[in-house]
Length: 545
Image (cartoon, rainbow, N blue to C red; front, side, top):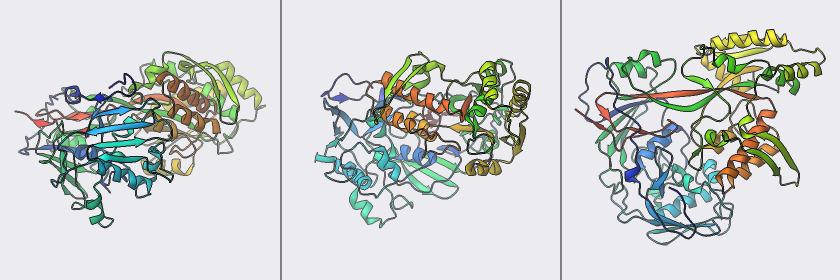
């Protein structure tokens, strides 16, 4: 969905654009056939809340997107289309958005859904009755910090959003659960239990939640739904928190499950898989340790091995490939791939910061990766005047497919730098705990992200979740500037500058892009997935044969 001009009414054509990203699988050893009428899917994790303004996990968001719709929807290919709104208008200055709702919208209890339900949802965000993430997401909406509310309804079919500053990502944000409608009378009748139990939630999407237990959640077709994608299957049984999903799949106990690189080999050779390049593996260098507190030492370690030589040696597992960026391949910017945008190689140019200072970066956007450089590694070592650290260890979780790579890496550092780095392999719980506590010098770090580029970069900021974080204040400012950019090329340039700042600290060196997979049973078709493989959609799913 592309904008063609301001003050233009946009009519959205969503139903014809739905992509069947999941194809029919032919699995020779699927086991016994099930008599289940609906569809069965296995998920990791649990569902703590279905309050859209408070949800936080990927699974909660996935369930909500099957049961609710906002003003807009994001299709599996990443493009935007209609949800509850049939069209919208944007003012010339980009500060006023006017949405017209479709007729005959209804909640799952049969009551009408009106523009006021969207206004109340934003009121919850503004008044603090929602998670802090929701307030941050819609910080550009006027009144979020107090004052006159920036969201109102002139009539039952019109929603108006007023912004205090432009937000080029607003349309994408309006497709997320935080912007889903909330009916005031129902909400107040739940007495602070909204979305937390089966009876304290209503829906406006293709499905409703029929039952909700710790290990299973059932979705039933919403008979009151009047949108564009009514459920084709009457029931979806979601099994939660299972660890043996591949075994269950092979035994015919589930129709859909995620498959990782380790369990991939368990599937029959006849299986067809959907592949999502939605993760990266990076080398983390913990500058908060005495061994790695000097930039020159971290620089030497990053320049001291030829990563491309290893990826071209044939020793790298099939689920991995050379990464030229910290950003996973699925991350998108204005409906375009960030990796594709930056591969064009535009100059990073000059950026002027809020304090009046500026930086001139002569690198090009496709030259941000840290590559083998024996001369630079030796120069960095020389600056240390022979003071090499002791007690360096490389932390790795047990069962990793990259153990061979780590052995190769140890030898590279010994041969090229004269440094001894021990390999420490620990169980998964210990690995996660030590990363969280910063109890490591070097570590391999896998990060799986959705398609929101801004979220990927924020992950390595001072308020992010990465075990190492960029302390340069310019980093956060570049992200803010990129978030406010109108032009995709300018936004990509600013994000690339932020990536350059992160790379220059030598705290996180991208190594490999990683892939994840989904498998689907041979008698099921129509399950769809988000472009990054983090969410499944069941409205068009059905059992055949």
